[in-house]
Length: 405
Image (cartoon, rainbow, N blue to C red; front, top):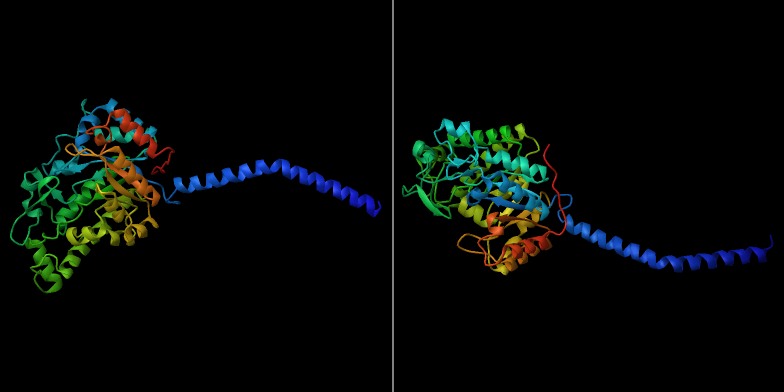
């Protein structure tokens, strides 16, 4: 082959490659463009990669009319699945009572009176069964924590388990009304709560357990005889008269932290992969006013997911709370979300407000949990179809969470 024929063949191949590239270029560009879009979409779906996005709803006492009926439970979990939710948080501890058959409660003569469904069935077991069939996680919500009404059987049967303020008052006023507070430093109280949670973990196929802002103690409390004696024993001095004295706050907060560490260990012994979830107020308030050092809990590696309650109508205030540095820190470690108000019986929340808050959370890579199920659809000036359409727009794609084995 001479040089001329070789060069001619080479030019022919180059011309062929050039025509091929011109033909394929639009296709290659389209493939590249779609890949970029898909990649960005993937990042948005998994904003907490490799942590799973939380899309949940709390089931409260206000929802008992729904969850006492098997067919209504089925309808609810089907709605949640179709709307691409992935987690349900049903209440199991409220007003000094548990919402399931409990030997621990029975032994203290505080057997609950609302734990059975309309046909006598176990409400919690029914929710878990139906939710798991729809690939929804179920994380029971230990709502009242150390809190109990002063008229509850628990408060009446075990008065020595409750703490008090410096002036001797034993109650405070909360969103739940007038309440008393179990002494979180008392070993019998700690054993009671531990036994309740071990009973729950052993007897039900739960995916975890959640504690909210009531797994704490208002800073005014801790002046009961037991706690005062313990503080004297450990520090050789009396508790400060100022309930917000930094040392006094730290001592009590650390005692609650120590208990949470032990509680985590006991639960994980029964179910190692159980999600230890915490749903507190923003950190400054939680620590200073509720002695709940949840950031230390996270840093101590005992929290598996965090949902910070941010119930604000004003979007700027909402954004300020969800942009705090401690939330940014935690979301680098564990799945993190925001508790959003969907409405109350006496205070409806518009779909526009819900959408704006969800979008703000999503832009920051945060999941969301709504308070509470019935208010997703009811107690609103908007129609059911409008509310449904609104929630459909929030989660257009599925985000399954891994079930606990």
